Length: 413
Image (cartoon, rainbow, N blue to C red; front, side, top):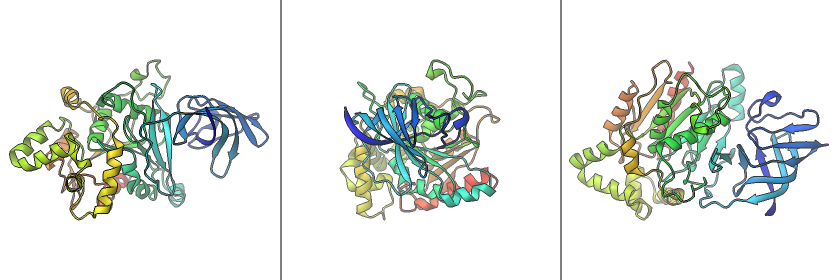
């Protein structure tokens, strides 16, 4: 045990303390939601116990807050607690430097494992504009293999926050700063990763109006597709079942699949590459399956980025990718045995889906984007001059503008 000053961020609460980031003093107490316990008021100070449980704790090394004293910061809407904190060391604390307005938080899953979450709220100017216009949906971003939440924080979170969107980026288990499941060789399955995202949405976005939009990149797109397949007429807003795995998936306002693995997986993509681009097929296999992207600058650039990206940028992202994946995201053999993705729900229940592909994608061919789009009854959009990592590539803004246009169309802007 060690004494340490930490901050607790509470995304919302039940009853009279509803709303994102809002709190109230009721009869000398400050109630706290998401299983974080309660803090009793004593003048301008708050003291009590914030117990281990669901919620986001704003500290990079720990997530269990013990007995302590806290001060209510009305300007930043934070409860600052000075007290006894149990350090919970992680294998992969993210080392990426966050931009202004971004913060690193933690979401606790039913298993007790924690997901790293990066948050950037809509800018104040954008919030003022929302007084006139209707509120925009939050964006929940899901990364792919060898990445983590940081990949969205470099450019896209700031871009969309400046345009009125709250942005959440989640590191899947075993990736980035998230916990590594004990005694497991892989981080999870497509089902378990999708369930983790559903649990996050349930606890931090389910009261949003409109509901959030999921953005998935590469294998993250496949996770979002499984999420879509699990939507039903029930959205989990009523009484929760005792078994978390039986909880219906929360509703969402839409989904964006960016350079996404298609519903059938990447096996057919590999076969097509072997026939039409055998050298490229060998390079992709060496880069991703053998992880040679981590040691070869040229292979890392060719796999993820445009040829004109300078060495310094590639080296920066290469280092972050090497540090991001502590164990594989999936067992690919077991994953392929569960594919294709179950069909989406009827059109009345399935939210709108945008499928975006990259002209210079070295990992997935255009046919993969066409397959994904056909699965959802839509047409894929090709972003010219951009590579597989469209949210990090030199033309990242061109890709972001495609997403923004679609988002605005969905809201009738």
